[in-house]
Image 1 (cartoon, rainbow, N blue to C red):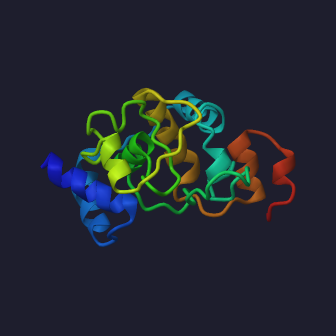
Image 2: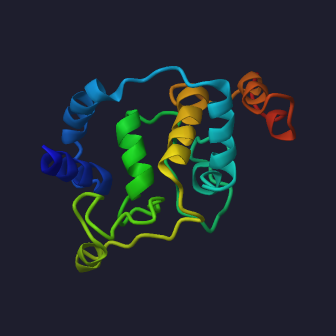
Length: 179
């Protein structure tokens, strides 16, 4: 089972196939068991998204794919992602080989834990992995996912009202957004 999930995950993340994504989503959603995160966990996740993980450099402060650093790769629009929590966690841990998403698990390709691949496998396939700004512990990745679950995924485009709610108060970045 693990080999099949790892192979499906590798194919999904590298973009080699699109069809198994729905199958993987269905198979993994049963083990997902989502609950509503605590407000403190969401706030911690937002802090980690913006600082330690520096996710906003590629994904944008609103996680809408409008990156903040022109030197960084284009990040996915997380507001419209269809990945479930399990697949998002795997993507944070293992990155997206060859796609610009770094692996935040410091041992990701040391022992085959990510897509059953090691660093030598990535090199032999010509897949590069950027270095993350920092590595994250699983609990920190979970907090980022709490933040994404509550404030980002499925929340639609950013509006002025959502921006104020997102930041907790009026910010300069909110002024130019539609009502």
